Length: 421
Image (cartoon, rainbow, N blue to C red; front, side, top):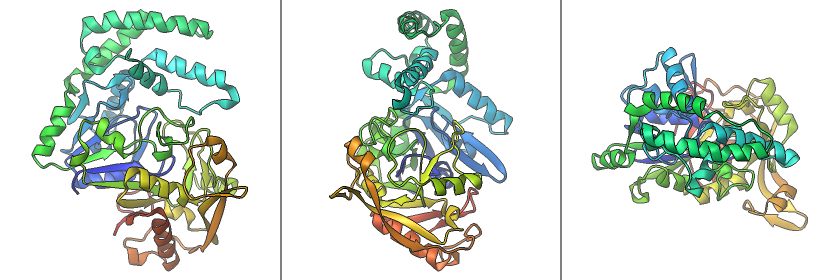
């Protein structure tokens, strides 16, 4: 498989967890490189459902080394809860390594996240209120605490007290209840003791893995258009969700990367606020009625629309996507006609890329091409030839419009519902 970065080519929730799980069979090391527990990867192993938030999906396969990289922000209490929950489901978390440089998400980050969203009112971003943005904010301001601090009891106690005092002043000004230093310290020191055996210098670990010729899979969270630099700013997350973020978030240099896989749905979805040019209430109603498209982390119904090739073509350019994995093809099985956005129009202006001007993007109307539906179930197809001819035509068209090679087609949540081309 070589060293592979996997990214979302849309607004997140593309079904990356399932594709990552399939690819981990050929990987030796699986690395999570950014984001926090605002992400959720859903994986089915047989009839058992797993929802992972911080731990890489490789944990569901024996003898895979799993790494939480320096670019991730970690709520230690939630990570311990995730480890315990996996144990209840029969998964022993052994081969997990956590970067000593990964920053912490603390209770005051969550409080700030919630208060800021409330103050914005109708202009809210639509965050998960998990404290991810404020944690990255402290990281950029050079006032954050890291895993290496958490496992150093005296240092952690001293710095935490100062940070809580500082943030309590802000919370008071916002009308929020101040935090108890004693309670936070007790909870997080307990979590630190549990996590200490996993904490190490993961940059060195990954460097040794590349020297040995081990194959590394970099597991992206969220999607291209939630990237802090390249997404639909300000309606984005607080980390670099594009392929470049995998290098900075792990310490593995770009010249050790062999390919980039982009994951995209056969239609499009988004959670949270911000423009979604091809949004369509009828498609959303259809998918929600099927029990699909609810957030793995929040349970919120996702906004849904027709496939947007302007977005995926832009994502291919930004990420350097070599291969495409298309998921949820079976979600379109019942449709007579399927639309695909091939361009944007704003008055007389035309766009074949995603403009950084959020006001312009919000006004853009999609230009559609139409494709005939196949009107039969694809969920049992085991090979390319078993897919309906019209489904194959649709897949070829969206891959060509996106500008990368079609390599994987998913027709359901199970591992065996995956067609490799």
